[in-house]
Image (tube, rainbow, N blue to C red; front, side):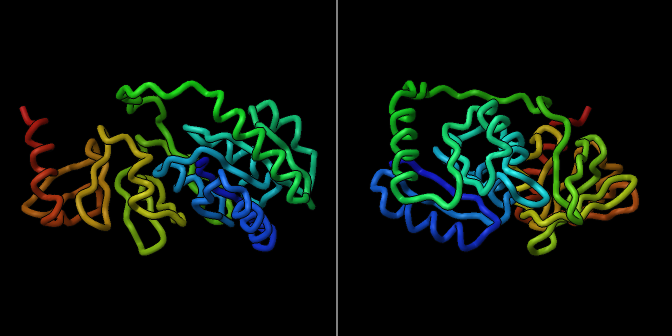
Length: 239
């Protein structure tokens, strides 16, 4: 089975695609997304073989979505417009389908995906560690903008239900992300979860007193479930 997801800000288009995929026996649709940022979060946590995506979306278009992915699945674009076709194929998109499309057209694309998927060499099971310093920034959506935040600027990150608030020296940025999802995108050598609602930048800690961390003007609680691991980490860096 080829595991896939679909991304489109149009709910009706997503529903049509979902129904068609259900009739293709070798495709397994894991999830659909109206918000491309939710898709990025999902792709950072789950194994996905194939992504169908609309390209003409507000805030973050399909090309930007593809460029934001560290690990890319097989890519098929389904769009109202062909104006992004050249850009798409330069990014190794396997197929570009124009709306409205028939079930037969989707089957042709799916067969192309299956042929490509079966031609890929079997993965070699080795453990590869990506260097924590490969990237020194993160992009997040906030107030209809995409903001770049350098890791060195982050003091702490606060979880607020469906949002996170990223605190830096100069400002605080509110973004529609889960704290768990964001945690997977941060280098473990520089950041650590200390509470169900807080992640701290280890190099920004000013002091630790009992079960509380001080970073600049902020006081962050250390919960019992994270306390032992946190203090072992701190002790390992003591002189």
